[in-house]
View (cartoon, rainbow, N blue to C red):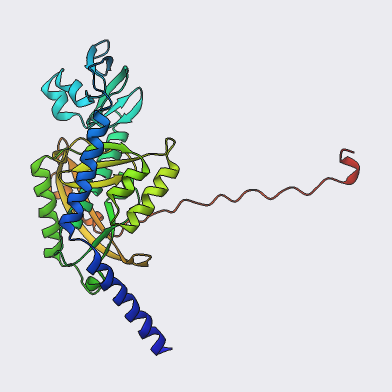
Length: 337
């Protein structure tokens, strides 16, 4: 039994080493993903060769009744904000187009109503969800670039957590050579500094809705992402998936992100836990905490929030609904002939 176990362990190690030898360098992978993103972005923009005008009816405090004439296929909600005030440009995080959540950098393709959303709205639920999702995306970008080139990093499909969970998270599988690595406080501080550098650059999250074939080409070197693409496409009403690009990093998202990294103000990577072994090896969960630019916390409040964000988050799996048992058949006399 011991010999068979050792043999299987050796085979897994050998397979991982062989796969690593065939895998391109991380920088090449990121460059290829961004190149495919740019190519598809250019193709979609070329679908609107002529300037066609659309009417955008603005909604919101002080804007009801305002009408903007914009360019179909090129103008975005952010373009509309620039026609208003600097306040709208700086504070808007997300938009509603005909009542549907819409990224600020996504082109408008038809005449519509538009409402710009901020963190100080009476009901910031949609913005908070997009912000938490964006913070997790930023954490994934940091993790993917944090290790030396000889170690591969596989970003996994992470659970979408509500803001009330106290922390956002990103699931990851690291190179088997790092199975024995335990992150120190300095490791977490290093990840935090990397995230803060991206925040300081104020990079836009560029959205791009694509077919599964394009997304599979983007993530051709990631087995887990290819499975995630197929799963998300099957769940999408249009059979498409949404990619985002932040700098040179391309990611797959299950929902809209906020406009830019600079909207994340206080940001800290608080924990990195092991979650056991899965199909991709030893799975880990990184957690973090952030507050938006417009909502700052006193250091005593931040310390309490941080203590909570250090605790492993509870991920509630969807409950399986058991159909009610069929009632017993009625007596034969009550059956239709």
